[in-house]
Image 1 (cartoon, rainbow, N blue to C red):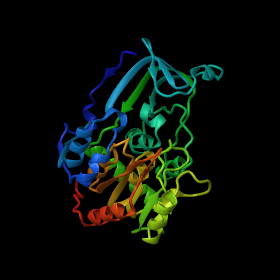
Image 2: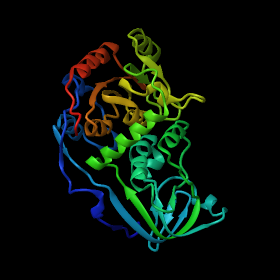
Image 3: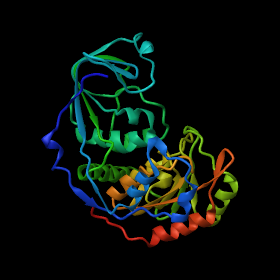
Image 4: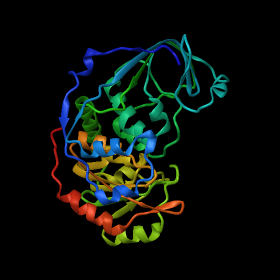
Length: 334
């Protein structure tokens, strides 16, 4: 790995503060269904996060790499190398090299891999540094819905496959802080200025989508039929010609399986709205609670029961959690 200078930047805002929040909602008797946690987390850590009534800000980190070569998904500075994505560096060598004395990379490694991290983290960083010269991006995965947000946010991502940069600045902001909340709210306003919201006030269910790793709900047709009968609007990300943001914008509640598609809620969920995450029992993980509590929104989970290669979600448990989330208080000034 390369030598990375972590540069504390006094312009990033005040020192870390403690932010009050309401806890996430879950049914204690469902915890026994959990078989494993995502991303090497632990059950104790996830429960502590759900139960917390406050959290400590995590500031944006800044790094400087000197005499750096970008090739595909790798960065090669003076010492070592830095993996950012699986894009082949050898293919990039066949392209014309671009040269910069100074440039700023817009991507995190997480944002290059996961749509949700790109949406909530990399787009928030972009907004903070949008007036910086020579903003560049490594080659990203194809996400059809990304164009909706790029246009609404007035963000232009200049993809670079092969480049030499004398001084390359990188940022990493996977955590949450008050200034990030400010930027997220600004981007939420831009989205609303760009799109109507025909389903405002409704409860929306976002399917997992075809581009994500399989997390299959057993008897999905029957499950969705029950949701539709209750008046819940059902959408699927990544469909050609569909403006998903328009379909979801200002929903009072978004229901979806744990995954990157839940990231749409960062910008689309109505002020004071709530996320209801359907948890696969072998992937118990709650990253979306972190941004909902930052923005003063509600968060609840329903944990599925393992059934073969899939997991079963009981509609009655979902409806019970909907009722709890609708009745729960909010902290809107976080």
